[in-house]
Image (cartoon, rainbow, N blue to C red; front, side):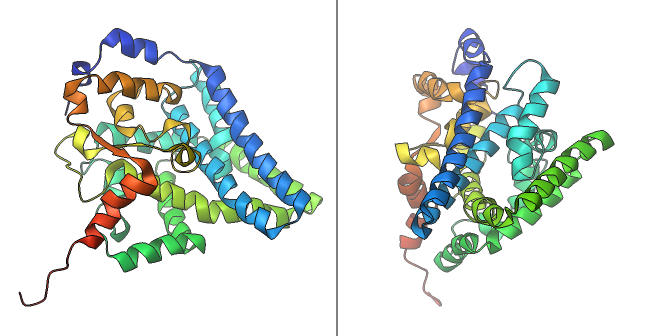
Length: 316
């Protein structure tokens, strides 16, 4: 495993690791504001075309909330861990069906045992057809199409539910509060007669775009024919996004994944600065797996290049 201290001075890492809770708060407010605005505009216009735009926008912000939950799992919000977990649960994790602590148990094991048989992410995905590359074009296209009708999403939801349930060691009081909050939402939706709105503005984005974005990001972070799993720097990918991609594929700088694995103490808002620092080190820049763009570099590297290769002829 590459030693991070070779790339950047400890004092600089300490500075980049300083927590600024207001920046996380602003990110949460932004995500929920965009969701609310997308719903409001769609309702005001009563246009199916506007709703079709609203769905990916809402799914993208759901993805953003999940990314912020990831920072909460690393205690990258504030020093008071108990308060931090409650804020992360209520505003980020519970709305997308998970908990900060349950995700943390799984995710920290992923960091500790990256790409080994003790890494729960690796074990869950290794050998799965959806994470095996090169990937047959027909299967890849059908898999992506499956997210648009919810089939692939339900598969991923079931897999995630089983894994996170196994890591759920929360107390009875916590469970009562969590499921009580869901019950409260149920009552509000019923009394307000808003189940149709819930279906169109939450269930559909969640069961389509949200899980599709999670899948693409998961592939981007550690999978593809070109990955070398002999060490962390070549078995983890950073994708430098184009501007529009940040809103969907990698909100809150989450695509700086190699940097995050090297220095998980750095919060999301300082990851671009960390990348700039690391790229000044030849030991990092010459070895790091850096890809430019999701719709360009990642698509070509993971899928298109293998599809363009001539297929072996039977009997030759």
